[in-house]
Length: 349
Ligand code: MRU
Image (tube, rainbow, N blue to C red; front, side, top):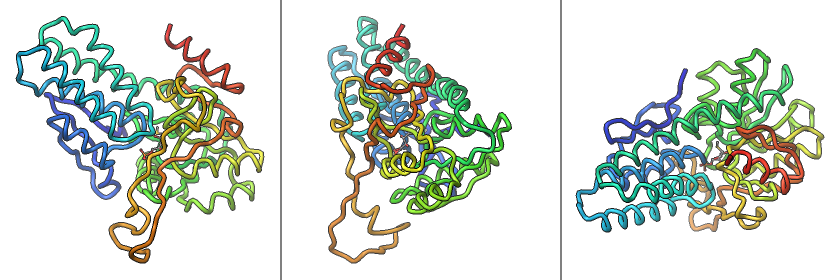
């Protein structure tokens, strides 16, 4: 089954509403860039590569919907749109990466007439979507080699088709191992407080008949210590030049547990998630989300009124805990400081 996280048709972006999953499969219709800003902010669409692709279409729509014949005004409005889209979520670098791709392209074609620019920006956004699926499939083929037969794999959050334009990063590797008959099984962390594991990863795995059990996050140590997990694999929202990696809150805990119990901890992420401008994880901006996500579950208040809450959406796993980083160009190992730039350079050629 092909899960279509988002698609573009006749100048409209359709976004699968992840807030309604797993109970309803409904698409939100985005006719303008303001609606794209809203679906990213409200997390109807989420996951690092997916929000990057959505933002690329946000730029395309920001161009398409303009009526002006004044080139200067047209270009300056696209700049404003880029700023608004970049500000939606701070941690995943794929968002600014994808917007940067559109703006660099615009720079090259800006001498053309307004109508041609509009068409070319739509084409560029579609190209980013198509390439994301291909990149995930390449990553899956590399990553699958790290997964032994009968492996029991633990994953966190949702790094699947829903977090990308299709196939997924960490879940792409899992999909591929399953497809090749490796008889794997998965432990799915529910991923409090936003429950991407329980709502989304469980849905994806069920749709594809990949064997799994849902667990709460605080059970991970129990299963790892009893040798019921052979490896941990997650996605990433930003990888710094030294290999430190930001991912969904709770990932760091899993990496420490994996190290303590001598099992490998893998990150699967496209090169667009690697931010060589940032030296270490300390520089990665961590999104702080609303207190409601913790004080209630499914709209029902569970905590006392008037309390203080901390709700960082991501944490940083130091590079020393990461066994390998799986990318579309192959598997990167330590020292990341040296090997990440080599891989990024190779990819740029
Ligand atoms: O807050 P979210 O749901 O956007 O966070 C998503 C994650 O942390 C994923 O693990 C990450 O984006 C990698 S997805 C391919």
